[in-house]
Image (tube, rainbow, N blue to C red; front, side, top):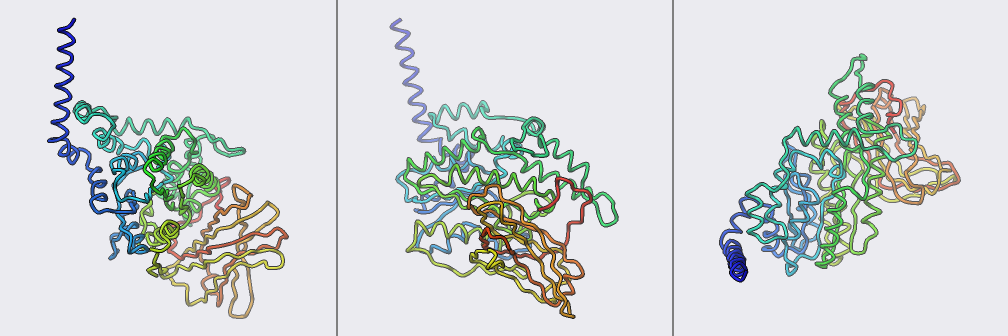
Length: 489
């Protein structure tokens, strides 16, 4: 028995020595080879960064025709020229990846504030069970809280999820078929049902012929965003862990909820999908926005359709104006932590055909009209076929009936008004919500001598309107027949 204990002790000592040798001489080389995300963490430490921005391809993606390739994080840094800011950007990353990056930043570093990208669609089964998970999870094996030699042993034996693309897809299909919506009077039971419904009704061109490309895109929007976030979502658990880690390290934490293309989602699918956008947004704002030391920057509806690079897929890839808009919104939040270091670079200029009226105004029976965008006929370019209009709205109850109006004046001084009801928000408790419209530029719009766009409210119940956003673009979508429950807002 004594000899056995001695042998066991010798083996343990040998393992400890081997682990020490591996850690000292070989571990860093393996990290650089198999877990290169850790190098991003090392770089921001070496650069003594006080603010770090963690992101995926939304941070560094740019249009092929763009001259300026700067990241969202770089545009944000312009607002704080005296504060060192760095970024940890890795394509396809999500909350779990960010957590491991943060764990490998020592508590003794210069880091004070952490900005973590929060993608709404990363909470859905299509991203959670992406084929990219296999290489991503492989990168995390060496970063686990275990002795380095044990991690290397597990990596050698492929102790991470290894699935074929077909196996990952089957997990996604299982969620689409079985996850049900917990929404009263919602017209769809599962994502699969909804996808089939859109496929059945679909999109048609001006000649009544099925447009299979637009129908497929509408179905993809449904499959990407038709889910409800709950406490059991793995991304929620990862973001919770990030909150705990930042509290432990004493870091300020900002979750940067990225803009999704709500304009196109509304135009292609309509109010049912917009409801899910709002419900999932509200879940995240409620769960994290009220925590001490945590701020959620809500960019969800901030970027217009024309500023999204990928028009045939769902991504958070923005042209320069979109990246600058996100950066400007984020900088206003970071200003809370660095008021004396804030500097407005005055670089946020709207592209041609994009108009933004900021400020807040209250509308009631005595003062029924919002801020108004006034355009003349010569300001409407021939290649523009659609206009996206968005604004934020705060309602106290369902007594107010706000209307978005397009007022057209012809050369004879005659006036016509097209009116569109503003859908009721998810919560009528005085919180800010958004509305978005996609309207065709018809012949009367194009030939009008003067055009006014505004919101009006003639009820006794007041509402507030802010950030009136109008963006003109080409008409690449066509009218759809019989939308039923998929009617656009």
